[in-house]
Image (cartoon, rainbow over all chains, first blue to last red; front, side, top):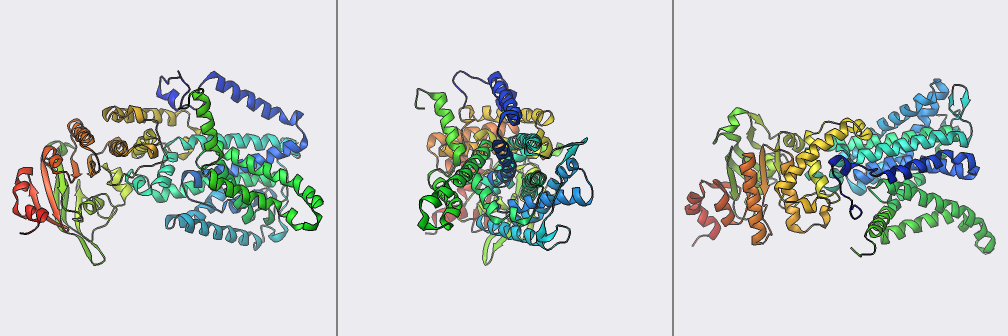
Length: 348
Length: 261
């Protein structure tokens, strides 16, 4: 809905996302603040934004395959692992530069994703979700049982360099991660409003009608999995070179569940929803980190285990609350807020 | 292409079509020609196999016998999306829209077969993809004007009333720029006024595009008014075929509808 008195005079303006000079001003100043942030922000906040950005890239991918195309995937952590290991192996063993390894790990994860997404050609819904859980364990098992991945010892990739400059701190990696995150967001938002995005939504909402419109179900489902896993792979590569330690403990089924949780809490099918969901869960996790020692101290007879599982309890509770009270997620709340703000003081 | 313009040319020849679900014979030995420049109605009692017949044409069902020839090409082994890209569009009895999208996006999705820019250019958007989007938007707006849908353009179709959704379904099929239009009960569940509107739209489309239209409909007044030919199905068999008046007077048709004495 447009604000009162705003009319689109051309189709180009109607499909534009950034429409007025105010939008441009907000966008550019927000980007400026973001890019200058490491100069004045604390180390804690900078590394928190790094973590947020990587999660955003992963969940953007999940948004494409689950939110748009409707194929629920619990394999996102495993595909991220494929990206992280590919990038580490390429840079350590074969001396490939990080800048080449980054897209290659996306493509590698995408290729594995096509294999992982193949069951979606036959099964839907819950059954597909089960199949992707199986794929998660197959991928992790393979990583643990291969020589080249360093088995359970993991790998130790180096920070990226460019002409002798090393991105060896969180503040320096910040620029790479945030830039990639912005590019990936731009791509996902545009994909959503193009032919391929509409084909994905057609498959999600009504696959029979989609076929009658000429949408090739097999091709588009596999394409959705490829793009989704490409996102996960790129995020995995960034993660590997940020942390410089890669092992399978970083990519458990719990992480995959957490990404699906971010998607649901943020809102399926919406790009701002990805940001809301990631922020919500990550901030919740940070709060729990502060709260659980306090809880252990305040109620000593509970022992240490309830305090340690407070994170899981909070996550589960948040999921349940959202599924019951706002299954369309925070993005839907945001849309309601926007339209009521535009209509104010009228009700509708 | 030229032969299509001459009237009475068979665009789709359906020969000896037979379809079976387990022990149930859904269609047996049905032969129908869909002729250019004609509105063909398919009528029959419930369960006569009318929708099965359309489902065979657009590839949901594969008959075990017979062939469906479209421009000398057999459609019976093709997938629905391949048949769609040949320009065969249809609507559904129970409205199968993309409920999460706006009416406009539903129509834009029907341009799928005509759009060329893939995922990578779609991500970049600016440049070729944007030009393509705008070009196809203009085509979609023509259909919106034709069917008088400007007021519901930006509404999510899940929130639209039944009659409007039926209209979006028809509009979406039209947006494919089809060479044949298959309509499965476009007027089911509508009041008289809405039926008249829909009949007017179908006639408008027919006058404007001069494409053959196949119509399944239960309302005999509508069928008699707007169709040039009628095929009657009963228990998967073709009972009669001909002009409305001939079919109306046909003994076997009357018996199928009203029963034996």
